[in-house]
Length: 283
Image (cartoon, rainbow, N blue to C red):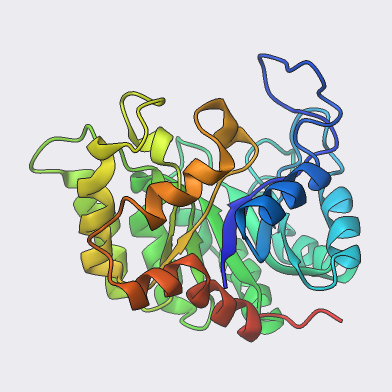
């Protein structure tokens, strides 16, 4: 089984530069077509209520309800681009989101200037308390600078899985002593911390250089620490600025030769399947 841990779907292409057909370029239909073509069984759609798509949670929820269990929703709750970001009432907003949408997790994009400390503030603890009680997966867009704060939160909520997007923002160009890499690897000590094995082009200094050999040390080093607490993700549709959906799969499946066959199956879907089965049930 292959499960995409990180993809998106929008009713209208939200990024610049524009594309010829923005109303179809990144839709659910495009995502499912690529899944079918490339043998991906399921996908967790990371919602992002960004430009032209302030209702992205509603759009994805409709697709999830119609998918027969093939698609899973990580609803955007209080990401940094919204007015509610880290404002009072976060726990109530998360509860309301869970009542409205068939979500098995929430996603939150953190501001670069933050340090992750909000999650252990009174508001943040209440917010994560709701995630724990509702059995929601925490899908967090963060950088290495957020990791110490997120680790403290993960320690307080050991039953909440924390999935960090795109290797938590690491870059292959980092030179020894690689302080940022070591900062992220510290989180491997917590059994509820996971890395999304995705974003090859983001880690590389040359975003078109498939199969991104420059990035191999990052993925191999992370594999040594996290093992099967990594989940492959395509990052469709933004990934197609750099490579195809199939390439995003083969960059891991074919070219990360340091991974054992059994662990490869877990990273491609087994790990996320286990998390989803333990998460909030969706009828």
